[in-house]
Image 1 (cartoon, rainbow, N blue to C red):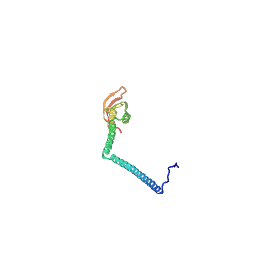
Image 2 (image 1 turned 90 degrees about the horizontal axis):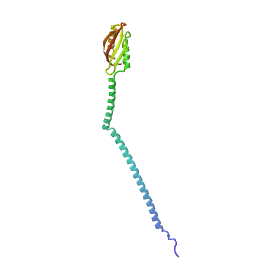
Image 3 (image 1 turned 90 degrees about the vertical axis):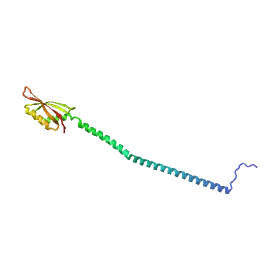
Image 4 (image 1 turned 60 degrees about the horizontal axis):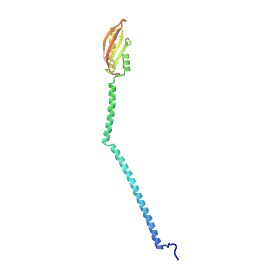
Length: 178
């Protein structure tokens, strides 16, 4: 008779050998996977360590003398800008309203202010005052010279009008307003 199945039973010794081979292969595969996992974890740890060192060195580089010099140069530029603004403010003519207020407060009430001309570019003023007597006009000049807001005040002209009032023209330069 002819055999239909070519399957034969393996001897018990061969079964033990196959069992050992499967066990050893599984163990070796486990060891290889554990080793590869360990190497991968070690590489990730090293990469993070290098990234931390890089960040630390970069921050140290920011604190280096060259970066301090750059920072100081930027601060010096800002300080120069602010100083220029302050100097420009100091050199600018005083506000017209404050000059007019100072003039009206300085001139006594016996004298009447007719006109005020302020040249803010040259920091000068021309004041026309109507007074009843010459001494009032001279007194106005003295009061203006005593005020820090006005310098070099002089009486430039005197005129009498029909109603016996004296028109005095006063000129001077603007000082410092408080």
